[in-house]
Length: 123
Image 1 (cartoon, rainbow, N blue to C red):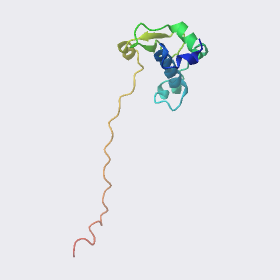
Image 2: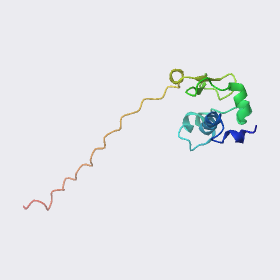
Image 3: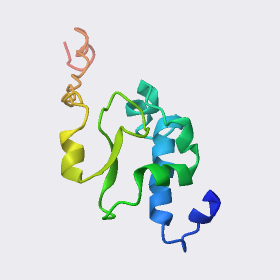
Image 4: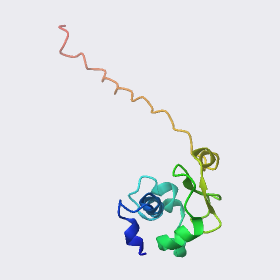
């Protein structure tokens, strides 16, 4: 079966195909919201996984749709031996730490010039 068949919403493995596409997007599409955490820091997908069926042969179908693809070593790419199906709890424990969000600085109003009252108050 060709990979394109999986793109049909009627195919029983369509949801898995969409996860495969998402993996590719994060690593290759600079406009993806998470690209800076994946492709932007050098995370790549191995050549073998350019083909969905090869990816599927290597990682298999997860036992539960709630499982997501996890890289065991976050500094290595998506490749056989570095990926597993993981729970959200396992994913959180394996995340690369993100810097804490900084509070927004309050913008102070521009100081008024010394002569701002000139002409407003009669002399």
